[in-house]
Image 1: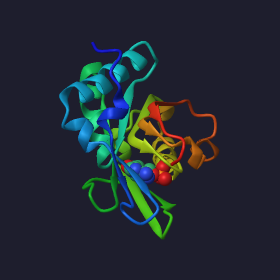
Image 2 (image 1 turned 180 degrees about the vertical axis):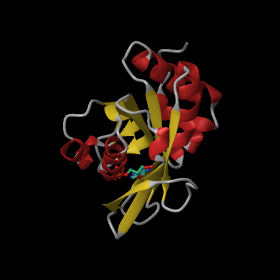
Image 3 (image 1 turned 120 degrees about the vertical axis):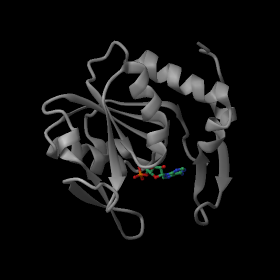
Length: 177
Ligand code: AMP
């Protein structure tokens, strides 16, 4: 296990993507560097192996990449939270606001173990709107939210205001440009 890896060096920063004024923190460069990806998974395992979580929920699509191997390491169920129209079974859905317009996430409530403690995972937490919709879905499906994990956090976008007192953990934070 590598504890001293400098994760910042593995995150590609792309100015003005997807539109002018946004600095995009790209995690594909983590995935392309095995040491960086392993560092993230080792850190997630270390953070949560002694925590009471029963399942992990992953947000499409970059959340899947981190949550799936993590679920396998901890041998816990993996729940997929997907964009509208992708899940084939009985779903519940939640609309939320994007900077421009609206988006909608869905889950199979049958995949959420009743009353169990679910960790919700995405690659990056910006305003927290996506994670708020995801945590609302887990609760609506009958689960409990044990925490939120993001590889990258942008706390200057004030995600805490939307996510209340849910425990939030990130591996690296950026504080604006
Ligand atoms: P939010 O709902 O504002 O917390 O946005 C979170 C979602 O949008 C995550 O799924 C991220 O992948 C993506 N995202 C938002 N802002 C950025 C950014 N500056 N760089 C990379 N991804 C971002």
